[in-house]
Amino acid sequence: MIDDRPIIVTGASRGIGLELVRQLLATGQTVVGVSRHPPDHPETEGFRFVACDLSKPTQLPTLIDTLNALAPRGLINNAAIQTELDLVTSAPVDLVKSVVADVFVDLVAPLCLSYGLLATIATAPKGFVCNVNSGLALAPKVAAPAYCAAKAGLGNTTIALRGRARAWPNVLVSEAFLPLVDTEMTAGRGRGKIDAKVAAAAILNGLNGGKSEMWIGKARILRLINRLAPGVARHLLLGSVPASFD
Ligand SMILES: NC(=O)c1ccc[n+]([C@@H]2O[C@H](COP(=O)([O-])OP(=O)(O)OC[C@H]3O[C@@H](n4cnc5c(N)ncnc54)[C@H](OP(=O)(O)O)[C@@H]3O)[C@@H](O)[C@H]2O)c1
Image 1 (cartoon, rainbow, N blue to C red):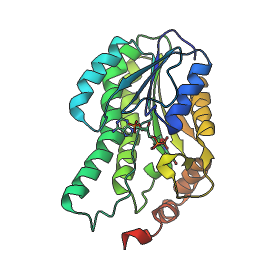
Image 2 (image 1 turned 135 degrees about the vertical axis):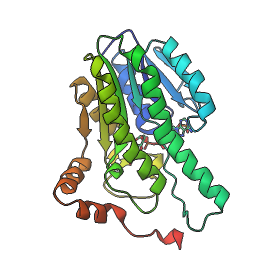
Image 3 (image 1 turned 90 degrees about the vertical axis):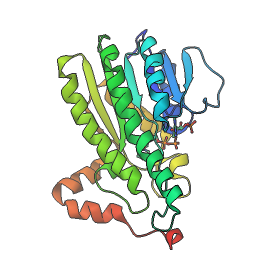
Image 4 (image 1 turned 180 degrees about the vertical axis):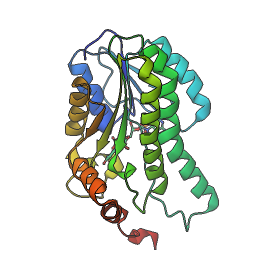
């Protein structure tokens, strides 16, 4: 995967994104990280940070121009938020704010970045766009309807982008479906989480192998269940209404 042209990783400040940055830099690949805050570690050679709040659509055109000027060869749309909020009992202002933020960061921003950077990425001999998705794209959970809707939409976006990118056989449009990963997003909930290092390595291995779809860990089992019995998959993921919502 090593190339002079950088790979962009959104959500680079922590979690899986930070692991992607570290592992790419370790191979000698140059990386551009995008998030609101820079990663904790001091900037290493080959790393450049671009600050952007992906929930703010007004910031996206400038971001696309800035990133195109860096001539990237790859884009990993990794940044996301998952707001667990009882939309039934929330004040309307909080309800709308949280749903809009989830949909903008998790769907609108990756969609805009993919299409806005595609023509530049296509000028690289081995260009790629990779959307980081979740098993929750297949079936939603009660506690985070906006996140699940955005991830389902992201899956749809990946298919459309793949169709648009057909003109460039050198461009891989890829999607990684992750199981529960031990990061700030899942702090204090869930069991059997995989390490962020493992998740990042699986994504990069898949990209190195030219995979257009990656079903990682338990996400693979969920996909199988969803194929055989979608009702069972829905039941498994829906879960119950969290006690904190009562
Ligand atoms: N953790 C899991 O169990 C799990 C499971 C399936 C899929 N995934 C997917 O894996 C990806 C990474 O998740 P993670 O668990 O590593 O999450 P995380 O630890 O919460 O990190 C999220 C990253 O997104 C960035 N971000 C959040 N809001 C942003 C905004 N408004 N503008 C710009 N950047 C923003 C954060 O940086 P700043 O706060 O500095 O902006 C941070 O770098 C996501 O796409 C997620 O849906 C995670």
